[in-house]
Image (cartoon, rainbow, N blue to C red; front, side, top):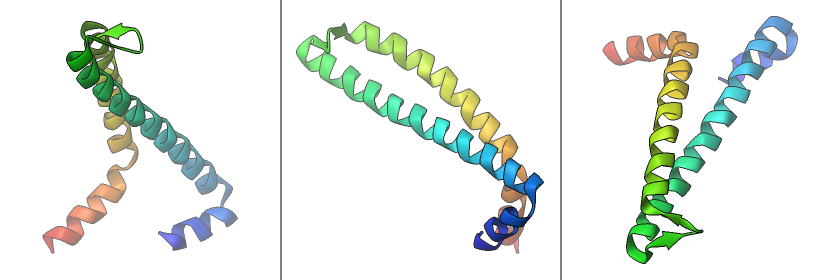
Amino acid sequence: MAKIFEEAKKNPKLKKKLKIKAIFSLVLLTAFLGVIFITIGTFLSTKQGTFLGMTQMDFLRLRARYGLIMMALIIIHLIMNRSVMKKELELLMG
């Protein structure tokens, strides 16, 4: 992987592609952290009745929306990285 990043410094087209992937990875990470927060909020609101002024049902609605967003982001991530996945599968299969 380090070799790819060294090549990207010299190749503007590859550098742009890697920047797009990096931005997308940050968006995916941020959404994942949101899902963790919502899951904790759902758990705490179940125990205490509310958490940060939101009921369990409010958190479940948010969780459903975030679930759909995460599914879409994961599908896009897999599509963007399909060539890497193919190489990894070839390595695994021998």
